[in-house]
Amino acid sequence: MKISLVFNRMKRLNKNGKGLIQICCYLDGKRTYFSTGIHVKPEEWDEKYSIVNNRNDDYEELNEEIDSQISELKESIKLKKQKGETVSLNNLKEIKEVGIYTSFYKFMQDEIEKGLLKESTKKSQRRTLLVLREFRKDLEFKDLNVSFLMDFERYLNLQSLGTNTIYKYFKNIRTYVNLAIVKDLMEINDYPFKKFKLRQVDGNRDFLSPDELKRLEKLKYTDENELNKVRDIFLFSCYTGIRFSDIVRLKDDDFTKVGEVYWLAFDMMKSERKNDSSTKKILRLPISKLFDGKPVKIFEKYKGEKKFLFDDFINSEINKHLKTIESKLKSGKKLSFHVARHTCATNLIYHGLPISTVQKILGHDKIETTQVYAKVLDVTLLNDLDKIDFK
Image 1 (cartoon, rainbow, N blue to C red):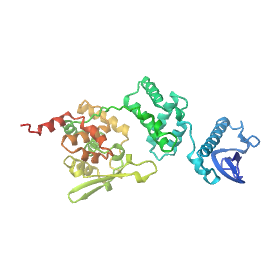
Image 2: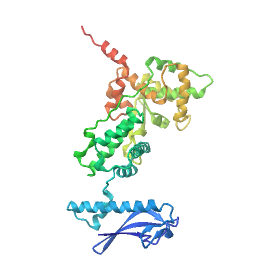
Image 3: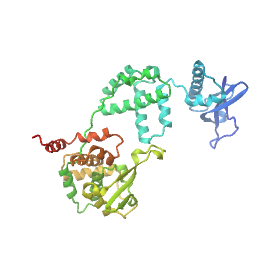
Image 4: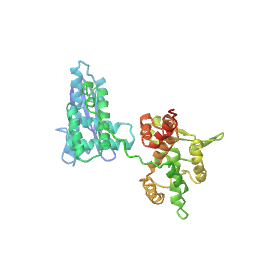
């Protein structure tokens, strides 16, 4: 098979006056073409040597990228032939799309960008890749072993990073190691995490005790409407466990009354992966039954005022106001909006609600995530023991 480069084959420039560079594969008198995704102006292409010339400021990087694409295609074809598989123009597209990676970093980067992930998840994974490259310029699959993971862990510890931060880096790496095995880029016997165990510790989860929650309910700010609304939004989350990203999207239509019970139903933002509505998870909460119906009172206080009930503040603003509220509440806790979700969980457990039911209210996929809250209230242990008659 002969592989070459073709510039502007269709004789059609884009709106920026640039033509496409394609890879041409020739076999048995037939041709097929693949896009490199690279466009340059006609005067920036050297027809004789089939390279981008120095009239383009990025000519070195572009030529390097083109060479890399051709090398990967040739390596893919070579591996197919070594396995005794047929290589034809008909299956060449499939071969190229699967690709053969030698660099774990290149594989991870490509998979991050084409994956159907939320942007926040991609940001975390890009950060992991950046730190990996700071530690080692490149990493081939054959060098991704337990020894590498241990060296990387020592490197991260020298940066004075917390245990859970280091855990997130390795969790992201493990995700793409698993994917590489699925795509036959690594052998299952070479799985480095079989001997390298991830370590994670429970973070400090501040929450308001039942007594502190009652004191917050009684706080009033006569001349501060903003603080009163912040208190109410925060309390609504304390009563329902709803995240800030969801609470600011609540509308009147999300609340319905069935018989004597008010229900709140909404799509959880955190459950939806980017551009994939099928991953949405609807959470339904009987808010009349939560904390003596206190969330219903807050809803009725603000319903009908505007499209979104609680979108008055961004997260940083509401956290700033919570610091002011804490100065009067004097709970000794570092109040942020996520404390409300912790407060809901721990107080439900304190009042004896089964972990499995708390899991449903919080919308957790795994029971292990909810069980963390059962550890933070020592008084729950005392209450459970008081119910037992040892006599």
